[in-house]
Image (cartoon, rainbow, N blue to C red):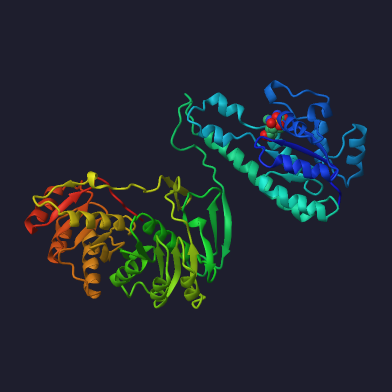
Length: 520
Ligand SMILES: NC(=O)c1ncn([C@@H]2O[C@H](COP(=O)(O)O)[C@@H](O)[C@H]2O)c1NC=O
């Protein structure tokens, strides 16, 4: 192992770099730096040699050329194990550079600024930085490349215990991180440039889409045991998204666990009152709000006690002992909540197979939804439309009551998370019947009613939500047969008149939203 004797530090984001440089200097490392970084060190008493003095060439062209010099890149790229390289370096008086610490011009932060123009963006494309990152990462057999400030402390510790050197294994990890870093950086530049028209206008979607995800885990298998799978998260996940989970106990999450947990979590997160959502095969089979998590669970479970078996249960508030005891009576795959009391965790610990996840309730959304199709990718903004009472238009003679309006909004918020065609019956903040994923709307309606009956739940006086318009009056007729008193639906069918007339005929109040929530 070779002791690190010379380091080059050139960072835009100077967080933590002063301490890092001090610790390197304390281990006898000579430090080379570019203008701003060198000034920071000199001002704080860290011995530093400016790159310009080292190469004999000034920084020039407004900083476009600082470190692009054979004395720098030769010092980074030269192989210490090849006599020919060693001789060439000696001939040209090129000294070894054993550690390179670089972070790049903040391109993404710059283009995110509302006042950023094309020239600002171009000037914030770092050239010398990525060149050094790539040189050092390529020569990781001899050189360490540091691109992440959160690594500084650990690297110093490793050097302290390794006679001033870093292990090859560490240099390899750093090199992988470095190439991922420059790949993401170039991806962001490509996304920006290919999203501009010839006239410089910004298109919504770039011609080339570059994205990076970070692997969370390999999975035992995919949707089925003969499929392999892995779970990746965004580099910077949306606030409060499932990917922020902390697993407190239980077996490893499976592919279906993650997919279903996401559906349950996104659904439960939208309610302000204590809520519970039980999901099976990506569909909510019971949703309710209550005075607390316990009562919400009792109501959600009652919707469909058969389907809840082996489900994913999500809460938007703390799970206490009573709730933990109640959910423990049913077979569940995953339990999700923002917090658990100590007593709840002690009770859940008796069910070691249950995966218990803690996720903070924060209202963030993915920037894009992605869906693979054969040979391609569909990209859209997520369906994060939030309906308010003011958005509703009453289209029937009968006006909904205040209590019905409350239930209609609740039913609508559930229908948004049910696969199309979706029909959801609700009453008093509880789902009473869910009809999901049918090819015809009237079949979803019939199924929702059959399920309510099977659960012994009375639909009289309840409300119904439909995720998209009724193409015919038949769905409304089935709803009416079951005694439902109000309907929420987008409207917009060519047969709206016929559908509204049916509601009037049955003495049902109907509101339209003008918004559709297909979910596939
Ligand atoms: N031009 C070059 O040769 C060059 N060498 C290093 N940089 C960048 O300059 C920044 C540090 O500059 P300073 O130390 O002056 O604050 C780093 O983000 C580094 O990636 C360069 N800048 C841009 O390409």
